[in-house]
Image (spheres, rainbow, N blue to C red):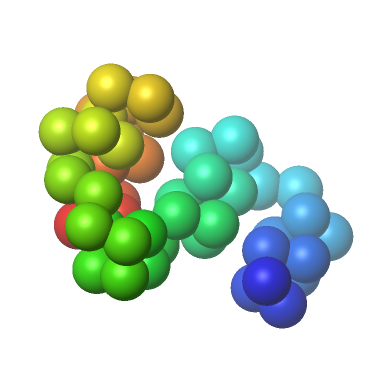
Length: 49
């Protein structure tokens, strides 16, 4: 969460913020890249990979 707060301070684009929040979801929560892509788009899914 510290990384997310830092990113908010530098005002990145939405996809960067989403990736920061979701970067461990596939690994830790049994969520597939396809599920992330469906909810957040291809760019975020690829960055989370």
